[in-house]
Image 1 (cartoon, one colour):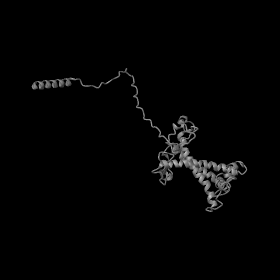
Image 2: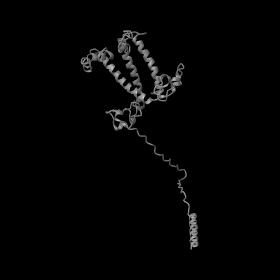
Image 3: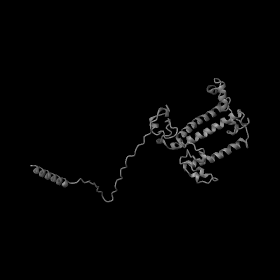
Image 4: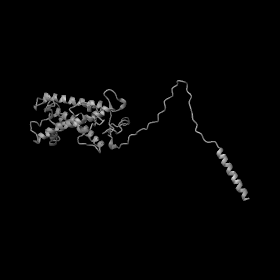
Amino acid sequence: MAAMTVSMTSAFTRGAARVTASAPKARKLRSFVVRAEGEEAPAAEEAPKAVVKAQPRSKDDLYLMGVSDQNMAYLDGTLPGDFGFDPLGMSDPEGAGGFVNPQWLAYSEVIHGRWAMLGVAGIVAPEILGQAGLIPESTGLVWFTSGAIPPQGTFDYWANPMTIFWVNMCMMNFAEIKRGQDYWYPGSQAEQPLMGWEKGFAGSGNPAYPGGKYFNFAGLGKDDMAKMQKKEIKNGRLAMMAFLGCMVQAVVTGEGPWKNICDHVADPFGANMLANFGAIGGASPF
């Protein structure tokens, strides 16, 4: 009985093995397309590109006014000082054209902010230093009488105010042309001979932040460049507003900004914006 059981088991196993061996193997089916002679094959479908979503920003990173779904679509926080504020849609790439170029606007804001910071410092410093006795009183002049506006100039440095004005214009024209060329043709200024200084104008690929031994001689921002760029644009915006204030105060009061703030501290109710607007044109030096 046992021998019969073993014999039947062995026969069943051999039969199962033969069935397994004879079973058809799975084959990969290949498809082909028949086309007429000369017919071009359709372009292969591109794989869908990954969509990079902007990181969510807190309310501290956005202005409360002027923020909408439209401008948040392109103000994604990648630019320094981007707080989502663009009520006129000037930086909207959909409206680019003519003088509205989002890349140029972002670049020019940085440049204007830097000039404004230098300008405000140059306006205020002579007044403060002259009043403190650190420079001769004759040179501690209000900014619009120092020769910045030639007809109002009252002091001859090495030439009369009109001559100095046009010398400044020529020098600024030279600097601005080179800056424009670096914007339109990045790195081109390193190839134009300039008394051996051209290698320092190679730039970094980003014309707004050229770096190098001339424009970042202190090597700032090595570890926190994004933070430094944000601070710069915020101070630049403040300086542009301050420069506008200096011009308005000069027209209204006929004084410099340092004298204006000293008068306000001494008499807050008699020297303020409302009181000054009531005297527009009465004390203007222009």
